[in-house]
Amino acid sequence: MSVYHENFTVTSGQNVSFTDVTEQVENAVRNSGIKDGLVTVFSQHTSCSVFLQEDSEDLTYNQIPLLLQDMINVFEKIIPTCRYEGQYLHPGPIHTEHAMRLRDEKQEWLLNTDGHLRSVLLGRSETVPLTEGSMTLGEFGRIYFTDMDQTRARERTVRVQIVGE
Image (cartoon, rainbow, N blue to C red; front, side):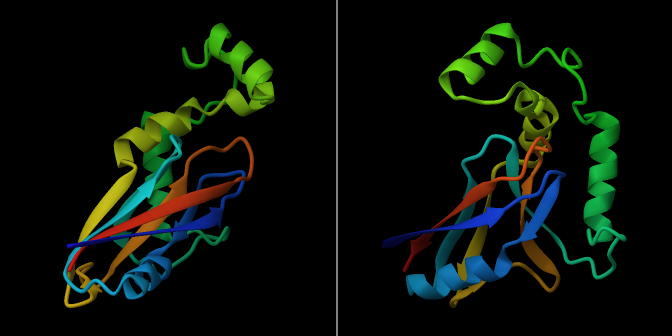
């Protein structure tokens, strides 16, 4: 049994962002030389998620696939975007003080509790069976990386691990 690791980065915007990473993961599968096994795509970032979804051909005026905009709309109803201090319990005064003093973060960057809560619901990884060198995503399946942190644009790391033969 072989294990192969590959990472790549995506750049997110200052709004909820979605990146279709299917092709980058397919490249990792080819690079691995593994034909049968499991492909895991993982986000180490606690306000980001990896999920499988159908490709949606239609786009909003902001170039967001309609199905993903629907997801944003649903999340806005159950976990509203954090717009002001005290809207959520987190971050509390200790976390805020440590983030600013120890990690040189700006106070407005801490208004991202919604991103953390949303990413827990979506999950931070997906595992896809690999058969004869191809991921079994189905006819319309795509792998998306989403950054739910709306406080600033960032560069994020996507991790891919392939295990098999």
